[in-house]
Amino acid sequence: MHPLLAGRRRIVLYLGVWAGIGVVLGALLVLAAPRPVSDAAIFVGPLTLIYAFACLSAWWVCRSHPLGSAQPFRLGGVLAGAALQTSAVWTVVAAGWAALLRTRGIGAESGRMTRDLALVFVAGVVLYAQSLAAHYMVLAFESARAAERRLLESQVAAREAELKALRAQLNPHFLFNSLNSISALVGSDPESARRMCQLLGDFLRSSLALGARARVPLGEELALAERYLAIERVRFGPRLTVERASEPAVERCLVPPLLVQPLVENAVKHGVAGRVEGGTVRIAARRRGGYVEVTVENPFDPEAPVRGGAGLGLDNVRRRLETLDPQSAGLDISRDEDRFRVTLRLPVLQEDRGEA
Amino acid sequence: MKPERGALRVVVVDDEAPARALLREYLAAHDDLDVVGECENGFEAVRAIAEKAPDLVLLDVQMPKLDGFEVLELLDRSPAVIFVTAFDEYALRAFEIHAVDYVLKPVGRDRLDEALERARERLRAASPPPRPAALAASARPAGQYLTRVLVKDGPNVHVIPIARIDRLESQDDYVAIHSEGKAYLKNQPLAELADALDPARFVRIHRSHVLNVDRLARLELQAKDTRVAVMKDGTVLPVSRTGYVRLRELL
Figure (cartoon, one colour):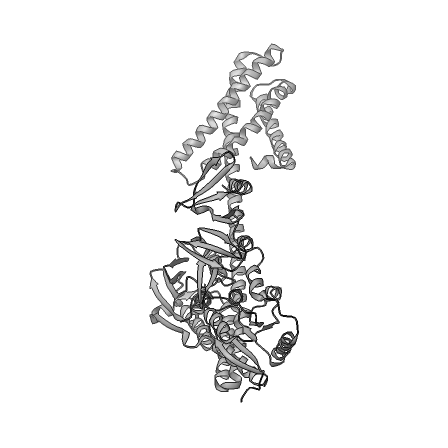
């Protein structure tokens, strides 16, 4: 549907412009060959109205041939062809209309008619060309607006996802269980209880600090995940072990915050915690060209009872990745019989290039 | 400290050592309670409760192997139960199966003492407590179907994922669960178990038969209005008239 036909005010405005064009066209005819103004008006009026609608077809021409979609001269050929064709059809209609008027005694000798039609044809080409230009402008305007809206939408989505990540970080069950552990340690091992309080404090503080920034060094992300694991180790004891492998260089890469720890939390909650014998969470980070790859691997019991909230952490991570560049951000999940592996790809902004 | 005679026997079930330590510490202050067992997972809990015959169980919900509700489902006895968990979303289910109390972590001493007092009252009461096992089997989260069926076999527990079940057959008070060439007997009415299964997958084709539609090979007309279902393993099952209607609706 043509955008002009969407509103009555637009149509009225458009026809107003064409009324002006009709007046000019009539005047040109009178100037080219003197005749009564009424004759010129009755000839030009209906023709202008028809052409006003014919020129709307430029919309589809412009849409199917966006600027820059083909070589300039080829595009020029297409557009010129459209203008010539439309104008030719219009001129034929004009010839018919003139002939009809002549049978009613309006209009005059045939010599003048050829000139009139030549004028109509030239005017038709010019008007169509202008219509094309105007439509290209409308299209450019609309696509600029759409791009702006898309940008805004993705910014809003990104902010929302970051907030959610932060909220998930303050996951109450994790806090409740940790507080319960502290409460137990206060009686039996006060020194450990103090250490646990400090770990929990550090974890919460760095979660808030990282969540407030757009880009953080990967090393800080990994450190946050380790703090989390240190707290969980108090709860699960020897059942939970951790292995970490990352090159120092990769830890300096800047990445979006709070994407690694949810994966580690998942690995504990839905993996190691569900196994009687526990298991090892393996975290590995490496540089791959323009992105870093973080792998979190854990064993799981395929027969373990289903835990509430399964996959919520992963969903949130995935949604946040969708707001980033799809070329360099992504999440792959693979599982075999009793191992679960999540591979996170994150875009890199090198530290020396500063904050994005 | 020697527990006094007639002390209540208590089993503590939690997969986290600090959580067990905390409960043990709180329970030690009560002379009339005797902790006879501590378990780290659901399987251990089922076994310990069968062997130690406790009067009271302090039970976590999320654990390896079996969750707290599944443990209760498998019990032949009915001790009083106090749930101790960090999750408040199971409270409704817990009270549906007549748990004595539902205590949230972090656990406070006063709150646990209150729950223990309730348990004493419940155990003193002349009326026998309702059997949690029977209730636990039917109390599942609203709008969710079973993902696995648990069958107790002496001290062992079989965990049968739903996808591996071929069919169910009613046998008096039991239901026989046929899975991969084996049959497991579970002490539960067929209708109750069938209700807990996904109706898009399991159809009651007869008063005493429920089948997994994935395992159905074909339907055969035996006589006018009498049909039988032939399973992929060759088993032939009777199909009642209403069973046929249900089956046709699904296929």
